[in-house]
Image (cartoon, rainbow, N blue to C red; front, side, top):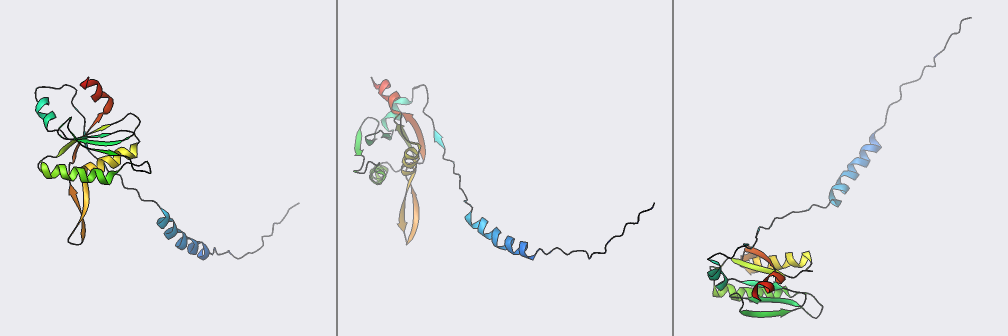
Length: 169
Protein backbone atom coordinates (compact mmCIF):
# COMPACT_ATOMS: atom_id res chain seq x y z
CA UNK A 1 0.00 0.00 0.00
CA UNK A 2 1.27 3.25 -0.93
CA UNK A 3 0.02 6.53 0.32
CA UNK A 4 0.39 9.66 -1.59
CA UNK A 5 0.55 12.85 0.33
CA UNK A 6 -0.90 15.79 -1.37
CA UNK A 7 0.33 19.15 -0.38
CA UNK A 8 -1.94 22.04 -0.61
CA UNK A 9 -0.45 24.90 -2.39
CA UNK A 10 -0.56 27.98 -0.19
CA UNK A 11 0.71 31.38 -0.91
CA UNK A 12 3.60 32.53 1.25
CA UNK A 13 2.08 34.97 3.78
CA UNK A 14 3.66 38.39 3.99
CA UNK A 15 4.33 39.77 7.44
CA UNK A 16 2.82 43.20 7.92
CA UNK A 17 5.09 45.15 10.33
CA UNK A 18 3.72 48.62 9.70
CA UNK A 19 1.57 48.61 12.81
CA UNK A 20 4.56 47.47 14.90
CA UNK A 21 6.75 50.19 13.38
CA UNK A 22 4.08 52.79 14.15
CA UNK A 23 4.03 51.61 17.75
CA UNK A 24 7.83 51.89 18.02
CA UNK A 25 7.84 55.35 16.46
CA UNK A 26 5.47 56.56 19.18
CA UNK A 27 6.85 54.47 22.05
CA UNK A 28 10.57 55.36 21.77
CA UNK A 29 10.14 59.16 22.15
CA UNK A 30 7.66 58.70 24.99
CA UNK A 31 10.08 56.46 26.86
CA UNK A 32 12.97 58.85 26.26
CA UNK A 33 10.96 61.82 27.55
CA UNK A 34 9.87 59.95 30.66
CA UNK A 35 13.42 58.90 31.61
CA UNK A 36 14.95 60.56 34.61
CA UNK A 37 18.42 61.80 33.91
CA UNK A 38 20.43 62.09 37.09
CA UNK A 39 23.42 64.25 37.76
CA UNK A 40 25.94 62.97 40.23
CA UNK A 41 28.24 65.55 41.74
CA UNK A 42 31.19 64.99 43.99
CA UNK A 43 32.06 67.48 46.68
CA UNK A 44 35.57 67.25 48.05
CA UNK A 45 35.90 67.64 51.81
CA UNK A 46 38.84 67.62 54.19
CA UNK A 47 38.78 65.58 57.35
CA UNK A 48 40.28 67.15 60.48
CA UNK A 49 43.72 65.97 61.51
CA UNK A 50 43.91 63.46 64.34
CA UNK A 51 46.94 65.05 65.99
CA UNK A 52 46.89 68.69 66.95
CA UNK A 53 50.51 69.34 65.98
CA UNK A 54 52.45 72.53 66.56
CA UNK A 55 50.55 74.57 63.97
CA UNK A 56 47.14 73.87 65.45
CA UNK A 57 47.07 76.95 67.70
CA UNK A 58 47.60 79.36 64.81
CA UNK A 59 44.97 77.46 62.77
CA UNK A 60 42.43 77.65 65.61
CA UNK A 61 42.83 81.43 65.82
CA UNK A 62 41.49 81.89 62.29
CA UNK A 63 39.23 78.84 62.00
CA UNK A 64 35.69 79.46 60.74
CA UNK A 65 33.26 77.00 62.32
CA UNK A 66 29.64 76.34 61.43
CA UNK A 67 28.00 74.22 64.13
CA UNK A 68 24.77 72.45 63.14
CA UNK A 69 22.64 71.07 65.98
CA UNK A 70 19.02 69.99 66.37
CA UNK A 71 18.14 73.45 67.76
CA UNK A 72 19.73 75.41 64.91
CA UNK A 73 23.09 76.61 63.64
CA UNK A 74 25.87 78.78 65.02
CA UNK A 75 28.79 80.49 63.30
CA UNK A 76 32.09 80.94 65.18
CA UNK A 77 35.01 83.05 63.93
CA UNK A 78 37.70 82.83 65.13
CA UNK A 79 37.22 79.44 66.77
CA UNK A 80 35.28 79.79 70.01
CA UNK A 81 34.08 83.35 69.30
CA UNK A 82 30.36 83.34 68.46
CA UNK A 83 29.44 85.48 65.45
CA UNK A 84 25.75 84.58 65.26
CA UNK A 85 23.41 81.95 66.64
CA UNK A 86 20.79 81.02 64.01
CA UNK A 87 17.76 79.22 65.46
CA UNK A 88 15.42 77.13 63.33
CA UNK A 89 12.51 78.89 61.63
CA UNK A 90 8.96 78.72 62.97
CA UNK A 91 8.30 75.86 60.54
CA UNK A 92 11.13 73.88 62.17
CA UNK A 93 13.51 74.24 59.20
CA UNK A 94 17.14 75.38 59.24
CA UNK A 95 17.56 79.01 58.11
CA UNK A 96 20.13 78.70 55.30
CA UNK A 97 19.41 82.22 53.99
CA UNK A 98 20.52 83.81 57.28
CA UNK A 99 23.53 81.49 57.38
CA UNK A 100 24.51 82.68 53.91
CA UNK A 101 24.21 86.34 54.97
CA UNK A 102 26.37 85.77 58.06
CA UNK A 103 29.01 83.96 56.01
CA UNK A 104 29.06 86.81 53.48
CA UNK A 105 29.83 89.24 56.32
CA UNK A 106 32.65 87.00 57.55
CA UNK A 107 33.99 86.74 53.98
CA UNK A 108 34.07 90.56 53.78
CA UNK A 109 36.32 90.63 56.87
CA UNK A 110 38.70 87.94 55.62
CA UNK A 111 38.48 87.86 51.84
CA UNK A 112 41.49 85.55 51.40
CA UNK A 113 40.10 82.80 53.67
CA UNK A 114 38.92 79.70 51.77
CA UNK A 115 38.44 77.02 54.43
CA UNK A 116 35.61 76.32 56.87
CA UNK A 117 34.85 73.61 59.40
CA UNK A 118 31.31 72.26 59.63
CA UNK A 119 30.61 70.63 62.98
CA UNK A 120 27.55 68.38 62.88
CA UNK A 121 25.43 66.73 65.53
CA UNK A 122 24.95 63.00 65.86
CA UNK A 123 21.45 62.69 64.37
CA UNK A 124 21.71 65.24 61.57
CA UNK A 125 19.91 64.38 58.34
CA UNK A 126 22.04 63.88 55.25
CA UNK A 127 20.15 66.47 53.18
CA UNK A 128 20.66 69.08 55.90
CA UNK A 129 24.41 68.42 55.81
CA UNK A 130 24.47 68.77 52.01
CA UNK A 131 22.44 72.02 52.16
CA UNK A 132 24.82 73.39 54.80
CA UNK A 133 27.85 72.47 52.70
CA UNK A 134 26.33 74.14 49.63
CA UNK A 135 25.56 77.29 51.64
CA UNK A 136 29.07 77.48 53.10
CA UNK A 137 30.67 76.83 49.72
CA UNK A 138 28.99 79.60 47.68
CA UNK A 139 25.90 81.71 47.06
CA UNK A 140 24.04 82.88 43.98
CA UNK A 141 23.59 86.51 43.04
CA UNK A 142 22.48 88.52 40.03
CA UNK A 143 25.27 90.29 38.16
CA UNK A 144 24.39 92.21 34.98
CA UNK A 145 21.03 90.42 34.63
CA UNK A 146 22.69 86.99 34.88
CA UNK A 147 22.67 84.57 37.78
CA UNK A 148 26.25 84.09 39.03
CA UNK A 149 27.74 81.78 41.66
CA UNK A 150 29.98 83.63 44.14
CA UNK A 151 32.52 81.62 46.10
CA UNK A 152 32.54 81.83 49.91
CA UNK A 153 34.49 79.02 51.60
CA UNK A 154 34.97 76.14 49.13
CA UNK A 155 37.46 74.13 51.22
CA UNK A 156 35.15 72.35 53.65
CA UNK A 157 36.17 70.14 56.55
CA UNK A 158 33.79 68.06 58.64
CA UNK A 159 33.84 67.44 62.37
CA UNK A 160 31.62 66.05 65.11
CA UNK A 161 30.12 68.37 67.73
CA UNK A 162 30.46 65.79 70.51
CA UNK A 163 34.19 65.35 69.82
CA UNK A 164 34.73 69.10 70.14
CA UNK A 165 32.89 69.23 73.49
CA UNK A 166 35.09 66.45 74.84
CA UNK A 167 38.22 68.20 73.61
CA UNK A 168 37.33 71.52 75.30
CA UNK A 169 36.50 70.02 78.69
